[in-house]
Image (cartoon, rainbow, N blue to C red; front, side, top):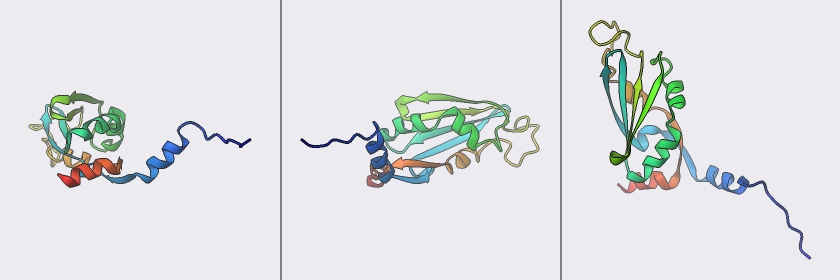
Length: 135
């Protein structure tokens, strides 16, 4: 009679995932555009490969974006999904100091906000990174 041991459900999968992911800037798997919408900025994040889009949906939550952009965004963050183009759109409310015509900020139109978001570090599965590398 053989003895069996049980690991908690998901323990093996979690170990495999740790070995199969790499921490990279969001820029490695997506590109972005941004601009102003009144006193808010509009940031679009587009997957570099269609298979990366579901991963972006999972990791780029309103809460995570708000935390990453807290030095810029003083209001709420709203997320919109654009599955047909494998993209997410974020509206960062109260992030432009009153808007382009009245703001004293150097970037009154929020043109650098996409670059700032693309500097976010994410743990990405190696298989998704390989898709981008293959082009």
